[in-house]
Image (cartoon, rainbow, N blue to C red; front, side):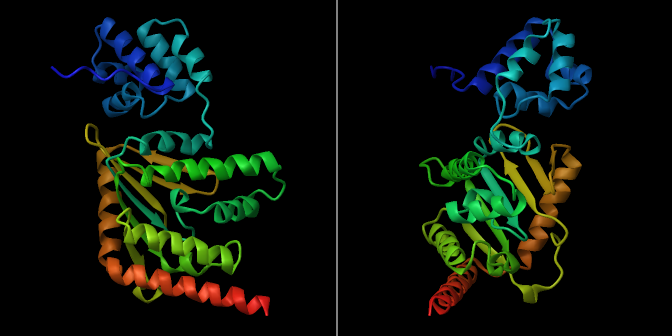
Length: 278
């Protein structure tokens, strides 16, 4: 008989305690969701340690389970290193069986090199402190390890050609960044597709999107704007995002053509860097 997997991380322990308290209270996930004002799917994510409740939701959990502020107090000890609107996504992606990401103006975070990440952070945080910058770069690098570990999710990466040509950090940084992506694609870590400028309008023109699938839970979708993010688990909205991704993918270049294009643009950036030095 296989042994039951025990919670490993603090978030998994939080979720397991929530499950135990819910069962002891005689509530189903659906019944608890009704009292917390959220979906049963979200309760399942809490209990699996994939997501943490927001403070207001933790307060409603305590009221529903009569736990006298237990889950609110514990939540304070589980502060994320990421922006509040992204912290749930950072937790979920570690458990994903399949990731589909789209980079419209930027290379997606988990693919970024350290120098590219640093340039992005400096652009929107002009009054940064060095320790802030270092923490940001390290966090991005840690996220990227998901795609280099032995148990890696299936990763689809759709990039707009504009994200490949915009010189973030300068041509040398871009050359290194694009070579990294092409190398990962050639090594089988990414299924890479590029939406060329010639493709014109496409289904994801107005937004980035990040899709996560799981072996034992419903899929989710995430979209982001300036200082805001929206994580969706409502089935109809998630399915609409998945459809938009599929439509955009159908307009993109093939995997092989995309890898070749990324390498070609990397060489253009490298040539531009060498020209600046002479």
